[in-house]
Image 1 (cartoon, rainbow, N blue to C red):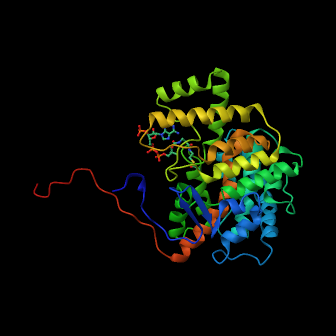
Image 2 (image 1 turned 180 degrees about the vertical axis):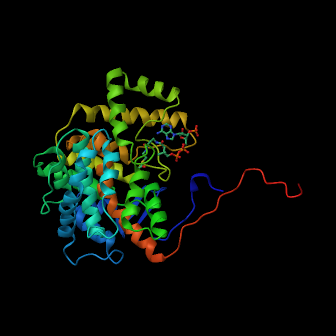
Image 3 (image 1 turned 135 degrees about the horizontal axis):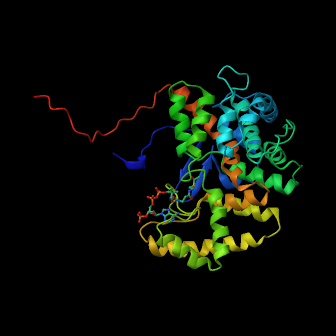
Length: 357
Ligand code: ACO
């Protein structure tokens, strides 16, 4: 029995490889550093999906844009039901509107739909009317515009594009595994995406970047960053944006995002505070958890980047989903193609009935 299934290999994949010891992430034969900030999210999706997911030849970008537009029409009638829900809860509600037989239930359509659902859910949670997508814009630019209500600068759109590429796929993480488990039953791509979204929602997975900003705000309000961190650790709380189940060194996505943030230009007081907090946290974690290398993870710089491009913190996890959906869909197709139902066993620890009685 492996608690948390550490080191258990539960799938074969062509899609991505995480080398936790070397701090390396390979996406379809390419190091992440070759892609993020250099190749667009749409082209990286094409690369990830090639030979695995059937895509419209040379028209993937267009198909994703059309998916965003078609989803808007499907989701609009649900707008009145989104009030009082958090963005990620509203996103779950919106995606449930897509039926298995819907024209939208193709990989490109569903990828577009997650972008629209993310933007719409963020606006609904702020009591703002949803904005229609522009199918000709890039996924990154359109999501930003639909959330913020104005065309973003190219620097902001490029930074978000680099982010979407950085998180496009990441081995058999919890949400991707959830997508594969559901796909293995033959339940279909819509169900796989919704299951994955539900897994992503938790703070130990995709729900951490919002709390990273909360942590930075609390440390800033305290005034003494190190003392604040010591108090958190003394209280037995985890520092958000640090530690990873697989990486035993720096998460390579953190550096890619740090570079994208620098590329955006401008430096905020929050970035300077983040630098101080990162250094102090790494020193404290090394001291207190000497047997376990705890380094910065993707969520730390995600929080800073998504904040810098103008997304509200409650919207971070939905936007993560809008990029990771490309990975979920590819894994779901790969799993379904293998045709093998995922059905592990449990170790029974309860009592047995007394047969003799
Ligand atoms: N702050 C303080 N202590 C930590 C942290 C942290 N961020 N992460 C792990 N530890 C400690 C644990 O308390 C534990 O200590 P103990 O052995 O004295 O009990 C030890 O390090 C090992 O922890 P595990 O739970 O075995 O580590 P695991 O691999 O299960 O956890 C996880 C990985 C969940 C990411 C964890 O590091 C964590 O909670 N981090 C904070 C939340 C976060 O940043 N989540 C985003 C992850 S990235 C992603 O999913 C996309």
